[in-house]
Image (tube, rainbow, N blue to C red):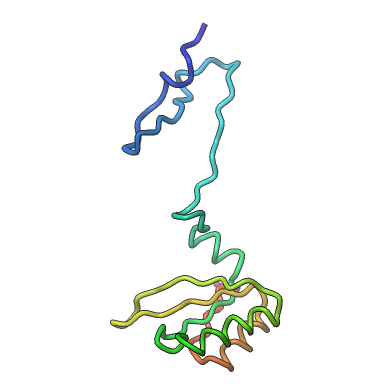
Amino acid sequence: MSPPLESIGRDHGKGRRHPDPAALSPARTVVCWNMTRARGQPSRILLNQEYPHQVLVPAWNVRGKIMDKVIAFHAEIGARVTTRSQYKNDSWHELYCFADRRHADSFQRLFGGELIDLAFK
């Protein structure tokens, strides 16, 4: 009989023990967990795959009443606001991510910024 699952594995510094597949019997199944970022946010790689059309806007440009217009823009096109912060050239920027190129173009025309298209990289 093999040892209980809780006693097998390595401690990865966070108090959790992950199963060590070498110590398990062939009859046991190993449960795998999907990796997520803090607060359930998807990783950058996953975000870039799902939303390859992105607009980099200086953070000061999308504050206050302009932010209300950004939210209204996303509601109008039926997309959720998908963004992350980025520090570039000694200032903070917001990177707005879109699945559709037309939405990214419209956003850039309205709010400015730099269009980044990862679909062809």
